[in-house]
Amino acid sequence: VTARSLVCGLDVGGTNVRGLAFDPAAPTEAGIERRVPTPYTATDLLSAIVGVVHGLAEAVEADGDEIGSAGLGIAGLVDRSGRLVFSPNLPGVHDEPLRDELMRELGLPVIVENDATAAAWGERVAGAGMDVDEMILITLGTGIGAGIVAAGNLVVGRNGFAGEAGHMVVDPAGPRCPCGRRGCWERFASGSGLGRLGREAALAGRLGSVVASLGNDPEQVRGEHLTKAAADGDPEALAVLEEFAWWVALGLANLTHILDTELIVIGGGLVSVGDLLLDPVRRSYVELLYASDRRVPARIEPAVLGEDAGAIGAGLLAAR
Ligand SMILES: [Zn+2]
Image (cartoon, rainbow, N blue to C red; front, side):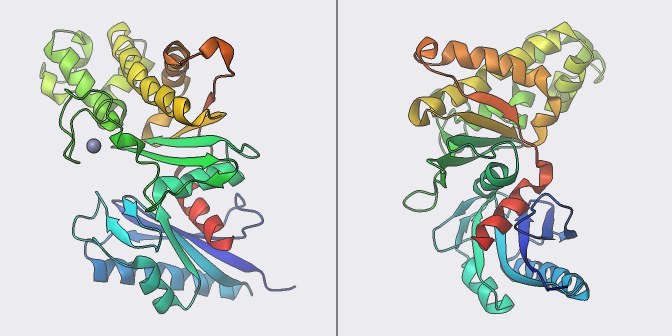
């Protein structure tokens, strides 16, 4: 038996640092996994990542294999040299040359990329976008992440900051965003945006059964209350979900106007709502799309790699 050269894919989230060791030729075969809680200082974060990679390397070597490179995806602005400029999850870690530090500590080739960009590559190579050259991945979670594949290549941009679709302004008079602007798409179309739409509806006297189940306090309405009530067939919750779907579709149509994409893959926590959300998104998307009767509109499909997408994509980028 010859030793295989595996890759280590890492996903640094707000809660966990997660690492997968896998064969880049078979990325969806079950690999070996390690996870530790995410620390909030740069020094502790580096040691945690190095610890995960060392743990995986030991496990892999016990099978006679080795780790040849490592790729890391992390939320926030990552520049083209693999420096984490800013991360919304880790306000204490900024301007950190993560790639250089990890290469020095690990003695391996390392890449560092934005987590949604890495996840887009994972879905493109091994998930919903296999063999699709024009693809966008959108993750709908607390915020919105995006990764763009055009002409078969990952789009990273001049600074490495391409794909900040969540901060595309869709209403200049809209609610304030932590980024300093008003009316960013993620204020409307993320999981927290769904919660906000729900609270507005509840304060306007709608969503009677949802509010009743929350001690009659409209301020308690969160996205998950709405999606659950909608899944149970509550017509008022379905109506709010339909409004939410319009906001999701607005951003997807805007992105299509720029990129004329073939496939839009939806990932993140909200994808678990399934066609209950995606069907109204698809309907509004075609209504909002310029020249929709003269083009093949993008297909809108759920992500298939789930929470592994970022780690798999980062590992595949490192293996390139
Ligand atoms: Zn913003």
